[in-house]
Image 1 (spheres, rainbow, N blue to C red):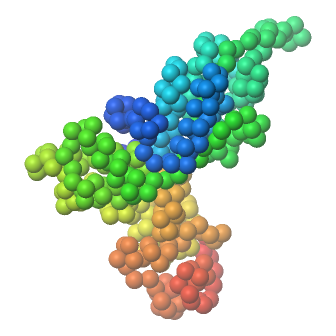
Image 2: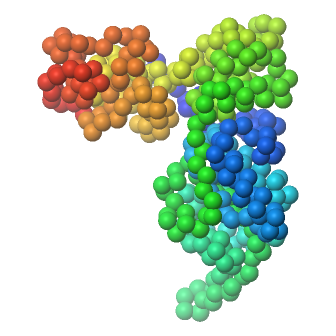
Length: 366
């Protein structure tokens, strides 16, 4: 087994939710829009949509929430239902593989109900086409029979509000995207906003934490409230077992060192990718598949799990010739970038802009 082997499902800094996260998040979720922290622009716009709908006594327009996982799309959907004092039905795109599945859900909705469809971009095409008419005309055509004798039976639906959530808005076909009356894009959180999230969650979990300790956790949370809450729980465990239960900056740093989350939020997999890129390939460029083999992971894991954050942090760049490390990556890992093209692995053409050097191209890079 490679020393870099890491199960993405075990990562503290992953923004996906496991069983424990789902149970704890249910208790930590804000119930009303005024309690929701961050996303000021989306929150204000959504508030206007909901207030106007309440004044009209009608269901609001369908809502599409897009953005990376862990930023509060599911929470906002539940808040929409709470603000409307309406029931909510929760399902997901992968669970709807046939038009009949969607027809069964839609036909059982009550007037004014909120239907939350997570990962809506992963819904099957037949169900997607049925959703067009349901969203626009509150009607679906149920096909009875097969072949020339098939008959379409129109089924009227009560007015409802669809809240769709997606991490990849670009995969939504334009006809579906255009049927949403309001689209909100969720942004990564600023450290100050995450500090508020940590303080709120600590109060709900009955964890005593000082402001500097909260800032330490927030700074390592990759701009994601779900990660902040997960790190808080692990720091709480450390503080209760090895100290007096109070979370300070020093205790938070010690705890996260145990869990291998550094001061920028990088974990073992992230650092493994950077270490391989810097030490084995001189900073690149190197192809994704080669880098994945060096790390001992699948190429898909490196590309979808580690790379997005490394690119966003300015530690790694994607180029037509392969992945390259930036000057910030060398600095963060405490290594000195190569300077002379003739001395070992010199800066490669794709790195010249980053280091401001005019090294000659080296053939054979991926």
